[in-house]
Length: 279
Picture 1 (cartoon, rainbow, N blue to C red):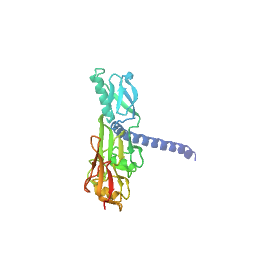
Picture 2: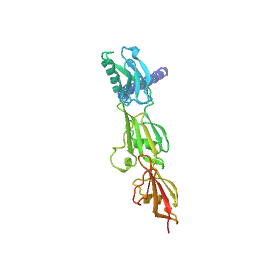
Picture 3: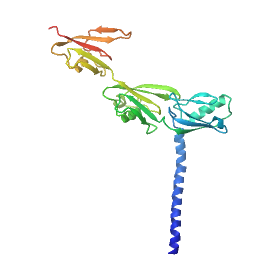
Picture 4: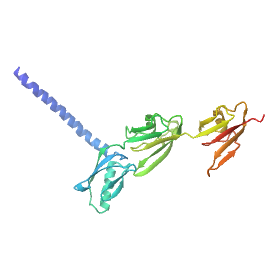
């Protein structure tokens, strides 16, 4: 009985120590992987970082990456770090300090204090506009559009992606239907922290006069005047599809009036007037 009384606490202590050792071993195993992931993290607008230089405490700063990916650092001034992995950003600052003659072989360390750049803004004609986190390092445009609920019926077929790549401004127009209707993923780009995805309103045309449903309508791809007339429900009993007038603004800003053929293409902001039949 006495032996059992003394052994029970020691048994529990051995169990706790064994569990603690297991946790430490797991952390030791995961640490290199975590460090690797951290060094590969691309800095983005809104990230707060601490920059330190070994044996140079005066060069320690805590700063925020600006919207254009730049920080201001002592001695060297503005440094563009947007889109650079942390390891590359450390090397860029070290190179600038060395090439400027300020330090010989500086050892620069950057630590993340607050991560804001791992989010993407999805704006415009989408179901749920807002900021969405990058769940993985390989999150693609199609994934982010799905998170935002996709484009609304009034949204364009083009998504505009802007951000920073390798310290340089980045802008790309991407055809949304081609992400799903064609093979390959050339347009389904991998997004980075700080990117903005914008879906503009779809282009429209206008129809009035002797049309069944006058108003504004979305322009579908390769839409013709005949198809546009069908969108408006066709001519009324008093109207005629052979008596159309099209108002179109041309490059110099002036208004052009033409009598279109039914097979002519419809352009953004075209105004189609359906005249009365002469009979």
